[in-house]
Image: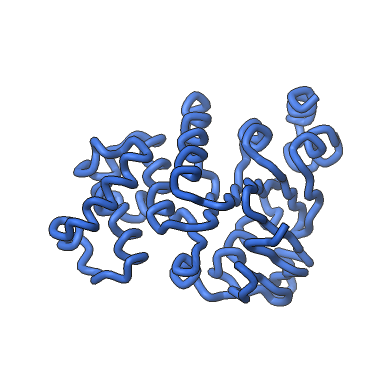
Amino acid sequence: MTALIETVSVSKAYGSFVALDGVSLSVAAGELLSIVGPNGAGKTTLVNVLTGLLKPTSGTVRFKGEDIAGIGPVALAKRGMARAFQLVHIFPAMTVAQTIGVAVVSQASKSLRLFASVATDSALRSRVREVAAIFGLDTKLDTESRLLSQGEKKLLDIASAFALTPEVILLDEPTSGVSSGDKHGIMRTLMDAAKHAGVQAIILVEHDMNLVAEYSTRIIALKEGKVLADLPPDAFFKDPDIVAAVVGKLVGKMSQRAA
């Protein structure tokens, strides 16, 4: 399969500290790749390299065959890869419509007079309503994001990334802080939205191993900045040493789940 995004021997060092050490991976159309690992494994650094926020110390990062090392998330979004940036937490007083509108405006290269645009641009308003409806937020367009439930805030974060019409979307802990009962609802909404929007591949950073087991087509485990495993879910969860390295005491539970 042709890779949409790939890294080849990517390393990232901060002085003497090596955050990533020779990481190679690829993501093809139709995949949901989960990146897992204990705290300090290098997940955040890898995400920042993949989305152009960080330039690797060495190695290559490509999206659709083009070098994207350090180009930044805005330029990358225009090429077709988006990342949820949790604008809800950055701008809690913005309404649902304004939050989604930020992404729509940036992707359409419209004037950055955002609030006036959301109010007066009919095409923009239509696109905002369309995206909001996919995530069940169309009845709350005028609600300030700080007043949403935690689950709704997560959906709004994800909706903002989907508004960029990406081919590949990267989601960093999309269910963190959400009750266990709501997590699968968010993931099902996410999967349905991806199909509706024509998203070709998803990269998911997630701590909840139940979600990883259920929704991934492939799992990459990091430990101390290196790739510990790159496996389909069945093989991943049947290897007790790998699971223990990632989730420790949950090894028994997760091994039984995969059996």
